[in-house]
Length: 301
Picture (tube, one colour):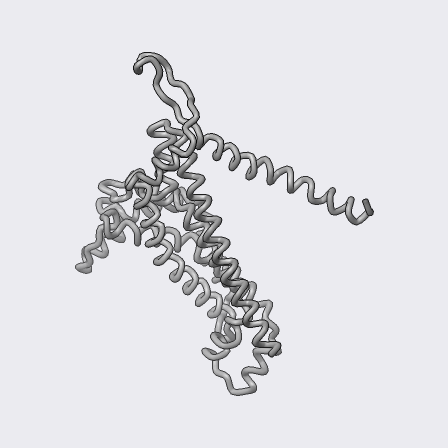
């Protein structure tokens, strides 16, 4: 073993150990737990016993309408949240990167500050702002003749999307802004000399150059969307909220584990959600990789 190999092994060992402890082992334990279930013994008069059930927990989760509808909620959430987040963060980043922007650092800090607020605190703040009896926002809307129930079946999803946007818009804006700052200024100057306007430079020059950052943010946002939990959990406590205890797959698993004490079913639901996230991540990565390779071939042709 060469000195370079030993140095690489020495540097990688802490990461691999930590990755094994916090990721590999919990996933393995969840898979193992999903293969068992607890049943009452002695006609229900004795204690419970853990028995091997194979794939029964997976069948029960997939056969439960509430679990399947949770994926429908996630689909609607992604279709609404992803475009708004990407467009909003990218638009703000382009605005800050433009020559017309002033006090960039101040606006970066102001837009990033909501991300510094813990998610559960942010959700509690917005639940207060959504509650008709307490919220000055709702009172102002009603005074203006605008009636909207943030806890209704039609309002619950936009309410959760709004909280997530408030939390993550500034964070992703910083990523896009950093990517824009890394763009070679000579390329932009050449486009300006060629007569390109601000809009053309933004969409025909800057966006193609930061495409890897767009793909990365889209991938991470998609994975994070599948893990939607904190916001609907807090919203579930709201008065008359349409967010149920099984509104998302994560809430379904949480309810199965801590409300019904069915840890096998909860583990199976979690594994199914993890598989969905892995498949979607693979699909997005493959799609962006194919597009990048195609663009590279076109440039070299």
